[in-house]
Image 1 (cartoon, one colour):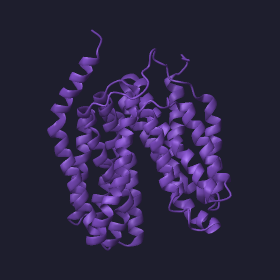
Image 2 (cartoon, rainbow, N blue to C red):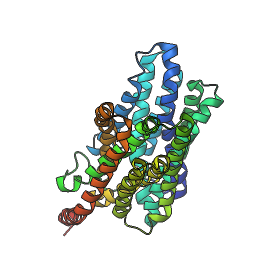
Image 3 (cartoon, rainbow, N blue to C red):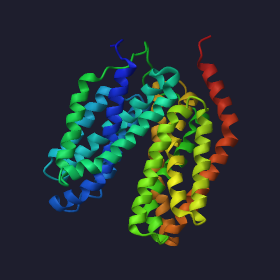
Length: 376
């Protein structure tokens, strides 16, 4: 069924609320795990984030292979059910089930909101993708404050998230359904899918800096209070970079914004390695922040209009954010935290050079593939 009252204003509200909610989830997990471990024992603590990631991956894969038509309403329902489970479960099994379902909502919202913001806001679409991804950061910033207001108890905060999702549901309107929309497995052209290598590298940079950056700063001799300030500065710069995309994306080709983000990260981490540790780390936050929204806009134009393929950029990002920390852990374990910045600087530099070298080839493959699919 189609709906003609799917206005951009309504989408802006519901998409913004959805991204605020899913932005809060990862931040809350880290704060809730010690509380749950104290209440229920330690055995499930190491599984929660992995199970959440599994739910997210299942949603994204379902969208890619046409097994399930992801919608905004379905994603909000999954998020509502998952956060209720996290709030009310009396033990680890319920918490793990809640994390799985919340992860499905997380993945669904990531796919649907990015796709609809890009396509339904017309010429402003690329900038709006950057804006809604900045709102994601607001949720991550607000979650710890909400937990403090709740006296350190995660249950009321998750109930609050569920209540917001419930109140938002009546505002959700479906996207206009294209007649004869394709189903099943989409055509997976290897040349076009090669663009996912770049979001993989970007996700390695983001997860490596967010996960290991503070530890690297401590190992370089910074005081804990200074590390906390630098980490806050990193995420503030990350948010500022995404907000800036609202204006930059309307004036600059997205693949060039992505290249600037990769080279900017390499340069900032080069400064951090050379002794300007805190300023370089903070500057890297802005450079990393612009990469995913720019990549998503570019990849969508390369992969074509098939809405099932809008899940593909999320798969590349999930792979990078999952495998990147595993690859970095033995390197840092063997040679120490100070090696983080030069290693990630090299990743950014190599990825940026590879991107520039492959732009013409990817554009040629994309144009040829789309020409073959165009009606005669």
